Image (cartoon, rainbow, N blue to C red; front, side, top):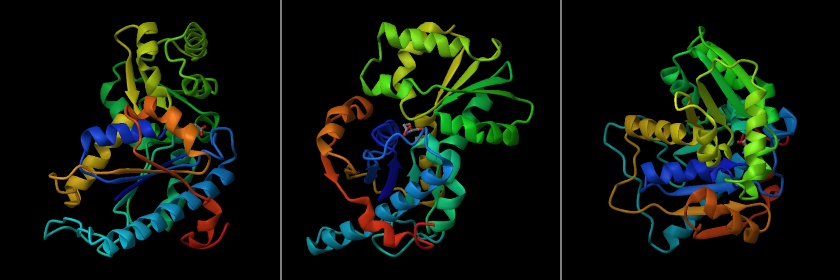
Length: 305
Ligand code: DGL
């Protein structure tokens, strides 16, 4: 199982890309819908929420393994004989994907210390793609206030390609517009135009969509931009990164079975179901509401520090 988490429903854009690229993988998805948005919260709060999410996913993987075993449906995970130290304890996640850009921006090092398995964030894969496609060597980044303020994208860009100039812009109005379903709407077009005009340069040729919700605005944005501008979708690049990592380690699920998608949310499952389909491209089969505080004692490394 791969654990994926996000502040809410938006991380399903990453799940969608993963299910297209890795259809045999079973995914446990946690959307912290009771506490969304994370984008305007302090880094300390986001880190605390992220630790709780990690603890929940680890506990859920274990619990599901026990249940599956009882049903005698448990299949040992497939590994190549020469696989490097696969987490061989059954019921562990093999990988955690932080689908949320805001969490990836402020909590990755903290989560990596607390996780026994690799933790993949959305920032580095998107940056690598932007570096490949920019010709003007100017890359714009749109994200939540928290993501842009953290300078995480800008720092990874400076590390990977110091010659590239980065232009970060918080775009807080886009998340509610997407959740409202206003993907092709005059109000959304006006907001997009205002944000485009706020970028402090006109010579950028690559825009990183640094938020789970923005990939849904691709068609509207493409209509407003010259065809020479590249849009980098962090959900797509993250799915590709996960595929590469699983291939390298020999941890891919056997290809004969279709993987399940089990969703867990912290607010009502009904609202999540209503909004989820436009992010996921299909109705989620299984959505359960959970109580996050029930897992706080399991936080690796201890407590609510
Ligand atoms: N998932 C968040 C992100 O990608 C957007 C929604 C929020 O602010 O929580 O940054």
